[in-house]
Image (cartoon, rainbow, N blue to C red; front, side, top):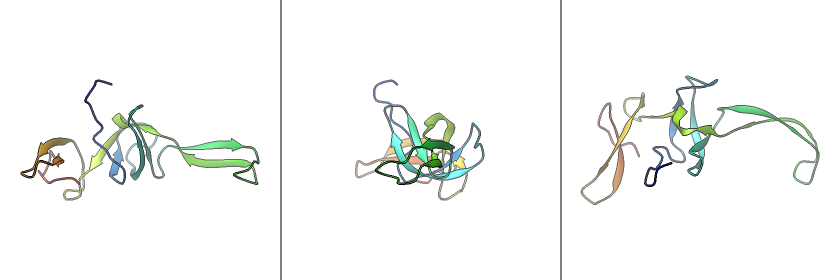
Length: 109
């Protein structure tokens, strides 16, 4: 990852999956991992984990949970036009850096 390149997605964003086994699905971002450029998305990239009984869970078995998905396979969904869109960054008059939808020009925050 080049220095200064951040992710376009943040926690609680609505995103669409554009590649992989869950292509076409939408979900809310639960966690972002910038170091590996991955995000944990609700009900996306579900995997089965075989777990033993332990302190945390008294009963073992096969549990389903979300695995992080690479950010390049996700696209932000615009609130106004309800499409998966590319975003640009611009500064408002008060100096804040915001994400702007490339399709409709609306601020996505």
